[in-house]
Length: 265
Image (cartoon, rainbow, N blue to C red; front, top):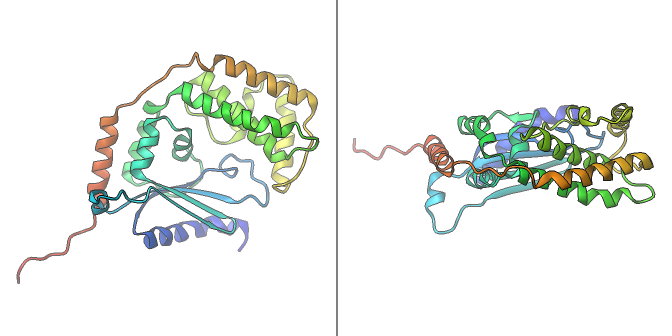
């Protein structure tokens, strides 16, 4: 099977995975470098999904399984149960926003997920999400100081930095594709140079090495420090928990298994 054929097989594999686990599939998307439009030829598929257990599972003493993970070659499956997803959204978890806004959808969202996508920004807390992306940038910068760092690490650092910059300027969830973030780079010539590096990234293998020009590293560190200085000036927001509770109850009622007719003849 070629890489181009894999996306068509993912919905079938996901349906089987959820059937075997006894859960209802609500939505599935791509969340990694393919959704960010910076995949290498050998990049894996980061398949993320949301699911719901049958109603009786939520009434048992032991809580139902909150996550499902499976690795099958290039297919990396990771799913969260709906209640877990709602709880993380209430905390303004950046990953949840990326899943809900992914441009690559493998399984179309059920109505409850559509409602969530429409209302998600109410739960977006700019300060928390900015610190999330700045934390990722901080993690990758030391890797770039190696003599020959991975091209992948450079773009992970760059995308995280630009996501933080988007949050500081727009106070909204950043877009996933890196090309949509590159216009934030205002230094003359940098956007074009980074675009050329992105083209190289798409053609190179995952472990390809590429020295980062000193001028780019100086810019990246400077941008990081400037953004970190202003992150705490961003607002903190808290959405309505009652609405999430009602969405969860409505989803349970909508997806409960049909009851067998036990009436008499």
